[in-house]
Length: 248
Image 1: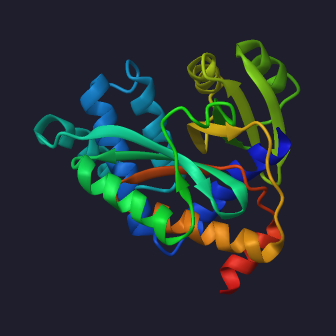
Image 2: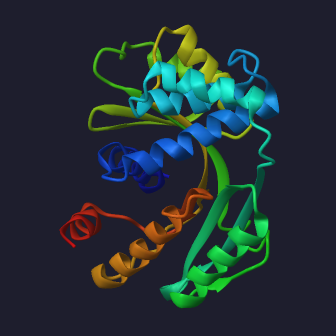
């Protein structure tokens, strides 16, 4: 589990420093608006919206921008729908892509095009259910939040695992206990850096550096699509791979 949680943290930090910050904000705003449309504008009564707001705050999105995204839910008539794609990239790397789209034909064509151009294979929905498991991943700043009962209280609330990775704690929960753990963290007066339901691979696959970079470039190509919200894969991502990506 360690490697999977570590990737969550790396992904979080990489996003915070990403030059494509505007695109990241666009995806966060879309998630906030859709969450408010589906479950109402009150974060206390809408766990999905609460998580979306937390993630936006973790990326230093201004409060007024978050509120505008919530308000937009009342007047935005866009008919967004959630859809997902599963398949394999080169070298046998499994990939799961989550989208929010107002034009399913456009999204299908775009995703299929990347698979075809980059030597991947688009599969059927459910074909990778044996590889990925949905888990809650919550990051909490480690600086001034830790006390001796912290881990016990979080575990009692349903946390499966708590790891420290540099300056954050990474808390893993089951899908069912995600919101209970999120609530406990709030009750302790701690502001989480991010709170997400992610698709975690049961096992990761190790590739040579050159092949790993090639796969990650394809992942980034998917992520650059405006309709794509999240891309999950089972490649073992190391610091060496991230450094190679940044050098190109």
